Length: 289
Image 1 (cartoon, rainbow, N blue to C red):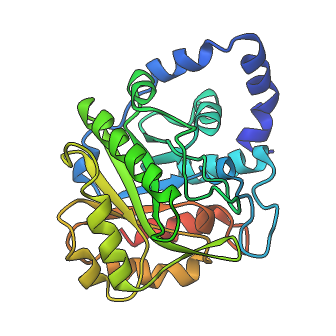
Image 2 (image 1 turned 180 degrees about the vertical axis):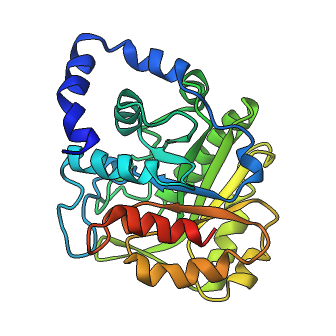
């Protein structure tokens, strides 16, 4: 039996009888120091909050919370993994399981753009805010900033992201901005993978807020990454997506050699590999760093 499954009863009991223990756990958590000088591996697990639970051909891969926690515990225990990016429900479960000591915790902030909805690009901030991230002793906040020139909801997202960048920076916390050029086809949001489209999105995303002092970018690997990364002087983390890890490794490895790239933020690709060997998938990714 896994750590998560072995302790799920106790976790649920503490949530029901002692909700204040979550804040207590946050304050007693040992934070990771000097992480800005390291090449980072961060595990992302904020997909269910946007209604995304499928991974490749597995439509309900992330439906079981206990199974997801199980996989996260395995990933976070591997050498070279620095932390997690997630919404409050998942972060708090992991804290109660005791696996976030000496780890980075990045709170996912805007999850209101539910996958497949007519309002998907009006991505409201329904998760963490800067005040709570600071109060919970976390290390930063992440915001998804999808840009569709044909969707009026984009401007609301841009404005909200700008406010969040300013609020996080005012507290000395990382603002992880994920600027993505997208378009809608039959209510499906698709990433525009052309280098020139991502370059334009980077220019928009890195200028959000009253200061960029604490802004990091989270961007996908596309063609001509040397040209793409020439568009910014900010620290860059590469995102993973849901492609099988064996397909992602080559792109990651090449991009990691470029100036400015500070590590990886990967979720579904590593948590749900085809063979379900999470430890092996994570180890292969951290080896690239």
